[in-house]
Image (cartoon, rainbow, N blue to C red; front, side, top):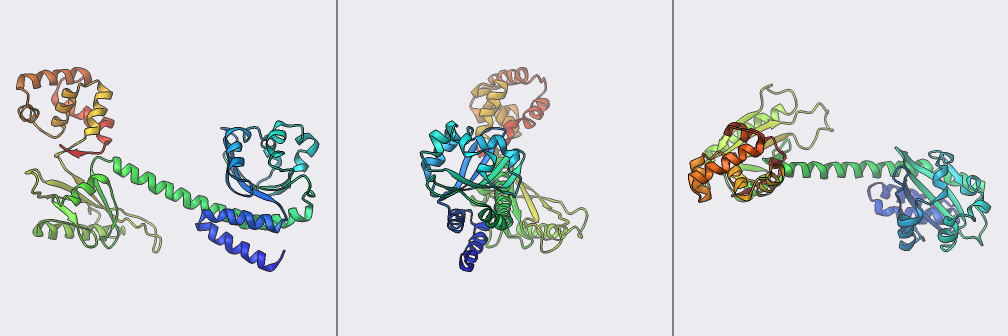
Length: 381
């Protein structure tokens, strides 16, 4: 192997660690180094039978599509996965001789039409039935892979595995961040996460609507602030106390509450400012160190109304009354808000009691607050 090609491969592996799209170039370089013709990185789930060609060189999209839709589960080598130790390069013909492979439908209808005869394989990843195979191939008119070539690929396996591990770790972190963002967006209160300097790390959709509307709180140059000056001074003090408490060395009782006046409603916003304490030492501290939870009593969930109808069989009118009660309105205020008579409102309330197996307004509200209906994104009514 030429030194320049080895250096090129090493550089590609470093790039592929953070840029998975570079794997196609890694496969291409391996094909060149091993004097192969085609190659691919395959993932197969032995439990579900699902198999995909994650990245390839020379195989093409038709090959990947056929393998995923039909031939992956029929791959005879997958039934012999125990013969492919993790991190060990294997000449496929040593596991399944060519004369036996030629008799399979997998070969006759899939490998042969794609001009694949000889296969050099290594399992780079193996966990809970999921296997990541590196495959390099040659056509029938070419010579088989030999032990010297298998040893050459074997010397590269640790670096290939390390790159794949970094990819998986970064992908898992990205998936976790996306999941956390979705969970925050489902939360029926506004949530703002701030770093140790008060700068915004994350904002869920409920908080975003409040901040963009400058409804008591608004975006500041580096974070968030209260609209009214006096309230903002108090708010900044709470943030500062929470930031001190986020290192675990500040006051034990560092959670703070406050009300924020709004111009759009007589009902103020209520805030909970709390540190996110971490035991991780510098420089491994989490980015988010302070959380601000924002409650807007006037916000109701249009999606929540639909959920209540689905859960309890409420009619549209009954769901609208339930939303009013969750906002803290009395029966009289609810009837005015809905434009119906008080007697009609009481009739709806009796039906709500019946459908939720309750007999008091307080119990009704408790049942509704504990239901999944409160997870839906809220909108101003």
